[in-house]
Image (tube, rainbow, N blue to C red; front, side):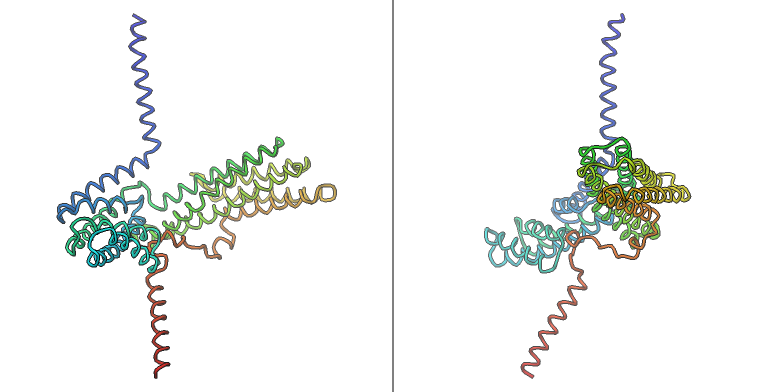
Length: 410
């Protein structure tokens, strides 16, 4: 009987383990699962609506919807606008080429070339520039005519509209919430890295240890573009979405800049420790003070972005980091006569790094608010140069040309 029970229980236990692993597989990727489910439902809806409203319009609507839908309403509006601009340009270029050369090798080649030229001339970003030739080739498909092009343009509008509607449900959190998550995640990693450096310095680290710290600090820096883009999206979203809090969006935008400055100081500290290891290591007289200062900086970062953040606790933590840095500076100055000058300079640079970390966490540095942070790169915008600027430049060129002609003949 016990043997039979064991034989029966073993498959049951294995099945239970596999079921738990399967649940965990989806639970750990619930954001991604949600996004693909919403994208699939949006594509199917676009197909159905496109076929209902426009004859054979489901395919184009589903394609455009799939290309346009993103993880946020803000991004999908941009993508949808890019699709509409690209379709309008692509359809025009395709109809002109087909009317002259008919559908064939020459028409397709010239359509792609002209689309690229027009996209470049209008300073379209990568989003719309890719859409222009793609939608042109969709329009130039079998049965091309003015009516067909109009139908496909209508299908594009339907697909983009459905993508915008469904993108609201692609993510459970708002742009501000996503920015906060990114900032909190990278701040925890930065605090952990400083804690590792503190423990390593106290125990006597090697060049290999310092190299690992520097590699981790460089990886942290790679998160900066994503944080900057997300905090910029949060601020842009708050400007036009009625339920968004502008003050909250501005606050998270400043936090994004602050964590960027903090990560830069963490990387500089890691580089300084690496250079010190290459030059022979840190002097025993300052080893303890450096470890204490790094530990204080780590605690200040973890306290600032803790889920239960308290202003007084945060202020105390940053003050403790400053005091630890000041104690390190005094120790370095006392050893100035006997110690290596380069090591003293490196130590004082770490004092400055810790001071900047504290200022960034307190957000009282003029570098955070008094200096304009560059906007997102032009290549990720729908139009690299705004239509208003392009119109003004075109008007100036036309006016200048007219004046030259007028002066020459009159």
